[in-house]
Image 1: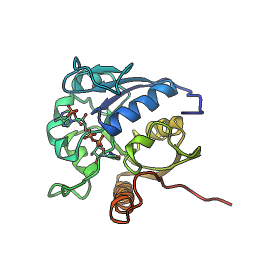
Image 2: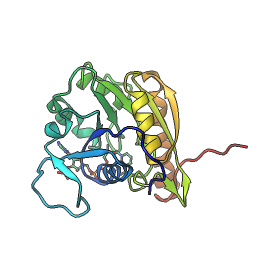
Image 3: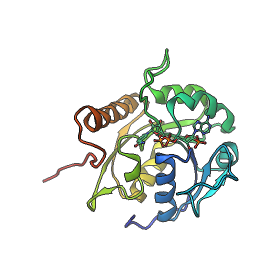
Image 4: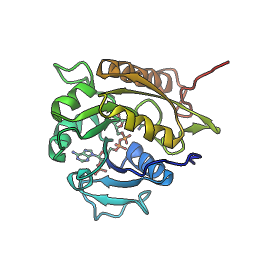
Length: 208
Ligand SMILES: NC(=O)c1ccc[n+]([C@@H]2O[C@H](COP(=O)([O-])OP(=O)(O)OC[C@H]3O[C@@H](n4cnc5c(N)ncnc54)[C@H](OP(=O)(O)O)[C@@H]3O)[C@@H](O)[C@H]2O)c1
C-alpha cells in the first residue's frame, strides 16, 4: 500500500476498469485522491470494484484534474472523442499496442491520443509495469521505476500522482520522449512473455 501522504487531493477519472484501471483506481483512492471510474455500464455490479465510484466515461471525465486512459489501444478511437475533454485537460495515456500496430501516421500511441484529443495535455505513464502492481507501486516493498513523458502542461501533475502511489518516478521530458516510455513497455512485455519472466517483476533503479 502507499506510504506517502498526498499534498493535494485531486479528482481523477480512470477510463476502463480492467487490470490497469481497477488497480490504478484503488491505488490512487487509497492514497487519498477522489477517483471515479469511467465504465460503459456504471450500474453493473463487478467484482473487484467495490467501494469505487463509477460513472459513464464522459461523466467521469467531466471536471477531473486528470483523465487516465486504461482501455485497449484498439478502443482509443472510439473512447477518446466521446470524453468531452476541455482544452488543456490532462490526459494520461496508459495504453500499450499489444497485438495491434500503432495506427498509420502515428509514431506512438501517445501521438494518436493527442490527435484524438486536440488541445489536451497528453502524458504517457503507468504503462511500463504489470497492472496489478500499479496499486502498491512496489515489488517486495521496493519502489518500482516509472518513466513519465509528455505535455509540459500535464507532466508535473502526473509525476505528482505517480509519486503519491510510491513509484520512483523519472520525468523524461516532453512529447518527443513518449516513444521511450512506450519502448520501455515493449521491453517489459518482451521480458514477461518472450523471455518467460512472467509478470512478477518491475523495473527499478540502483544508485550508490
Ligand atoms: N494488463 C497490464 O498489465 C497492462 C500494463 C500496462 C499497460 N496496459 C495497457 O493498459 C490498457 C488496459 O489494459 P488492461 O489490461 O487493463 O485491459 P482490460 O483488463 O482488458 O480492461 C480494459 C477495459 O477497457 C474497457 N473498454 C474497452 N473498450 C471500451 C470502450 N469502447 N469504451 C469504454 N471502455 C472500454 C473495458 O470495459 P468492459 O469491462 O466493459 O469490457 C475494460 O474495463 C491497454 O492498452 C494495455 O495495453 C496493460
